[in-house]
Image (cartoon, rainbow, N blue to C red):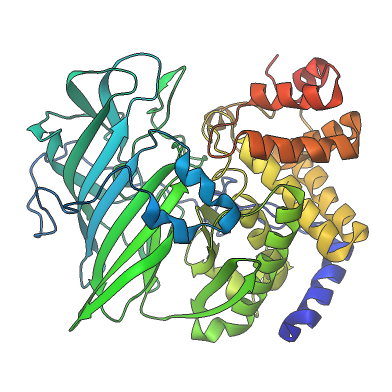
Length: 542
């Protein structure tokens, strides 16, 4: 688009001169070339200097709740759990064969009603869950992150295969354990139903503004009960650390029916497959999958512009006054998708959304869409001394990269956050290389050094759990030293071998879970070399 060729030249010049750094994934502002620039939501410091602490709340949760008649014995009668045809239009043609794979992937049916004041969501949920482990399961856990993010979720009427269950709340009310009447053997399935009511917060307390109603925008991050990954450690249900992304979910399928005020523009994971309007209410149905999560944002003030790359339509949502930056976000998303399609493999979905949303972080990733801070859409603003358009570009590119590393290739974002954050940083460097050339990319690379320098280049392993980093260390190590390790690894393997390795890592772990150990083993296969010393120097705690 010609409207911001000038902006992009300006961005190139500023990056070349300033060496800013970006990253953002549920945290604080990182750097960009030599000015202090935030990251994408995972860095641990909010955009504002004010430290926000989560409110205290009683640990008691009522097990009984009165639901609007969203509830039904089966809200989706006649729907075949195993029929994935409905998800086909949401995938580009080359990715549609995955619908015949992923045996036993969980299927969520969500019936949601958003209150007129947007401060409450009532829901009925049915999940078809299959035990894909090698041992029988005595219970199934659901995460209740709303109870850790300034709001509240109340669950009632929990049923297992039609029979009443007696759930227990654990981990400071962030987990619901549903005991099974009889153990679920490997390969067996269970249908789990529950009703829930979500109270939506209006203060950005403890959630970086990712969950709540702020500035006329409803953002619903991790708002419904969701089943976490079961792995060699058992159920991943620890109390969430304050500086990490929360979701560690298997790739699943989602059908979500959303009743909302008719004037509300709603964007969500997946594609819209049906819409009905009756007076002042609308009912929109979304189909999504495979995907790690289901996310929804809505506003009465959104406008949308769109473009396409290949088979994918990109939608850029913003307020009417933010048109210029909405166009910039759209162009960056287009360029980033092209770059990463070439570097790693095709983006799988037929749609991708970029949303301007209020938050204390710079940005956040979800399957098929990303949220970008409203502050970056202010044409006259500077963030940490860097013009908002520069910050916007790096943040969008970083968050787009998470579609490959977090969503398609999953990882434990609490215990091994470097696997998606460092890779997203490295991918952003590839974006700058492809878009502006090596000079701008070198400036962006310098931002990693600047970030690591925040902790005096301390020899802190990049492979620690998020909660083990203190103060500035999380952003400095995971976002700074992390991508520097990947650059060092590329030099040790050879650039061509490393590039082929990343494509293979993406393809091999597609819709599965990557780990530091599987990352290392596959890298060694590609270089036919022993990388133990390098991983021990950079990744592992010694």
